[in-house]
Image (tube, rainbow, N blue to C red; front, side, top):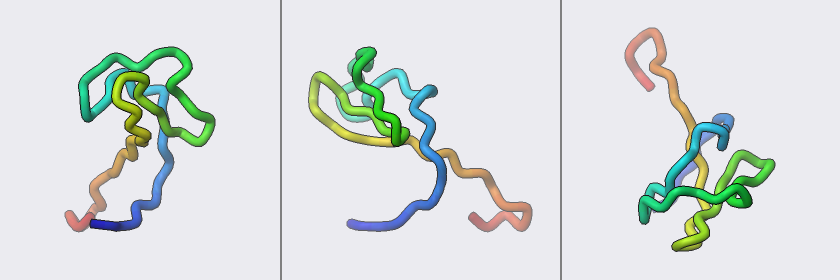
Length: 57
């Protein structure tokens, strides 16, 4: 499955890997807003989405 999500990734709010649950180390964070888990190697970002006023997002 592929898709496109547009937004701003902020890794300052990422503390744990969503795959294995391991706490992220201090070197896990990248300047592009992504993080990489030292335990399982998963490279990911978290994008917050806000609901639109008309209820469609």
